[in-house]
Amino acid sequence: MLSESLEIDLEKALGGRVLVGALAENWEEAVRLAGKLLAADGIVEDRYVEAMVQVTRELGPYAVIAPGVALPHARPEDGAKEVGLSIVTLREGVNFGSPNDPVYIVIGFSAKDRKSHLRVLQELADLLSREGVVEALRSVKSREELLSLLRSRLQRST
Amino acid sequence: MVKYAYKLGRPLKVVTVCGVGQGSSLIMKMFVDDVLKELGVPAKVEPTEIITAKAAGADAIVCSILHEPELRGSARVVIGLKSLVDKKEMKEKISKALIDAGWLEQVA
Image 1 (tube, each protein chain N blue to C red):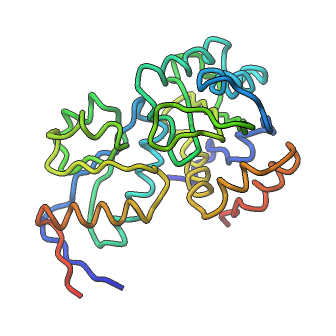
Image 2 (image 1 turned 90 degrees about the horizontal axis):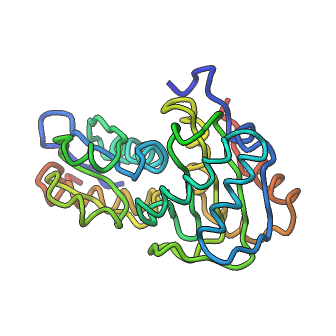
């Protein structure tokens, strides 16, 4: 199932959309930063960005999937055009009202259907479940450093 | 390594639940699949969102602790997770819940 050719990997889904050491007043602003990176590359329509905020508000702080890490996303019909990710690291944590607050890593996510993003999510989950990765992501000082950290931590499935 | 015996006599029906049904629920499914395999539990694990989960007739629901109160009662076993990517937490909570339900027995 996971070898379907239409599935793309995490690095490709991320496409270098990374913002390191950003400042956000609150969770809404942090989510918008991640969403705008996706919109700027045409991965999502502009309306998807506000939908991300709206969905997170409606459904509660479930978007915070692990201590310090949020994965906000909206629905495919909210203007998702491609499978895509973006990563924003925050200089100061923001609270989502989650037991996993404060959040320092916001991973914007878009999927255009229910299938093509499986591999990306799997790689992401695998990455985040490894010890020390969240702390390492939090401490990077530049975009290049973050991208090279990801590259070194992503085990290629052969 | 602890060994378990599965007692239910049919595959366990599990739903993993998040708000939209395509992000966190998929992430949980991947880990839950792994954990159940390690526990020797045959299972069908479906990612879904809250409304569908309530009517799914599942044996077990795995969700964020934030959704646990709302989903309690929608399945015999409801497991709330703090981190959705912490396999250790999942394995501990899932094995305990299945043992409490009488579906799993520690044999060695």
